[in-house]
Structures are given as C-alpha cells and as structure tokens.
Length: 237
Image 1 (tube, rainbow, N blue to C red):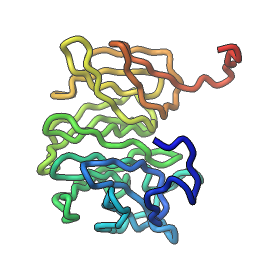
Image 2 (image 1 turned 60 degrees about the vertical axis):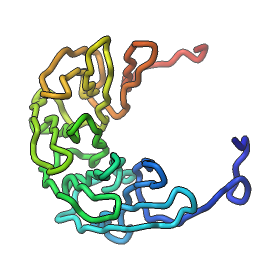
Image 3 (image 1 turned 180 degrees about the vertical axis):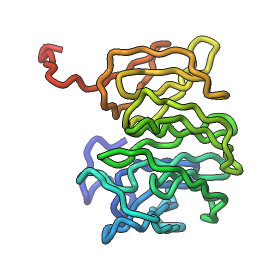
C-alpha cells in the first residue's frame, strides 16, 4: 500500500464526478455514489462506477419536486447509498427513497415526507435482513424510524420518535451478546430498537440537542459522542 499520494503519483485512475457530499459504497467491482447538478441542485444523480478503471457505467438523474433550505455546506446529495447483491438504495430527502438494480434500472420509488430541518438532510439508509431502514428525525414532532421491504419499498414497520428534534446521524447495527440491536443517536438520547419490529429496547441520556455522528463498537462496547456547547477538552489526552 503506498504511503504517499499526490494528484500525479500512486493514482490508478481519476474520474470527474458532479457535486455531492455522500460517501462511495463498494459492491464487488461497482462503486455507487450520489451527486447533484450544481446549477440548481434539483437534479439528483446516482452513479455507478467501474472499480477497476473509474469508468462511469451508468448515471440516473431524477428531478426534485421542490427546493428545500440547506446549510451552505450541505446539499441534496449528502446521504450515502446502501447496496446489496441485487440493488442500490439511495435517499434524496425531498424526493424520497429510490431503489435501482445494478444495471441502473429503477425498481421502486418510495415517496417520504421530508423531516423539517434548518440544515437539510444527511442521514443514510442501512440494510438489515429484508429491510431498508431510515431514521427521519425532524423538528415539529415529525421524527420517526422507517423500515421498508428491500424488494418492494412497502412499509415493514414504523416507529414514532416524537421526543426527538432534527438530527443527522445514521442508525447502526450492534450485536449485544446474542441480541442484534438497531442503535440511533438523536437529540439528547441514544436509543436502541429491535431491528425486526422497531420496538424500543433501551435508551441513555446526556447528549446534546443536535447530533450528527454515528456510534461505533469495539470489544463488545458501544461508543457514542456528541458536541457539548461551552465544553472544554483536555489537551493532554
């Protein structure tokens, strides 16, 4: 593995892509990512790229039905796709949740009410068994968890999160002993759910009212953090 990189050294290929904030996901020889047209930000793009040579294999564009307010450093393509052996799933806030097959054909579209947020959306879908799961936290009592069937986009379960305000974290799966849990960091609380049913298992408080980061696990433990306004770090750590 090269230690040093530059635009001209230790680079296998480079491909020009449109504007976006999402991360790429890899499935075998495919790279999937989202982007948006920079002119009006209403063109919402899904790309499939050949992992070996950087060639764009297909590009699908849909038009957002309306403009929404974003933070200047955010945009409509901030949510990272999820992929399996047949499909890629992308979330575009105002347009909803889309499923394409690996050839670029649209399989289904699930329209979803966009949560109210002054910064725009950033949460990403995750996969569990036959479900695609999204956390949709917003202001005004609209927050909820939504799980839909991977093949059809139909609702598998829905769990209200009325205590939570707008958030930008992505849910994660955690194996706690013999139990698989869906863990979501939201305003002031970290909450665990049953990923099969959406039923709440436990919660822990002490977090800030705006959360972005995703919890991580290690050695059987769960770690989650959030900003504390007015806090002070220890420079010796």
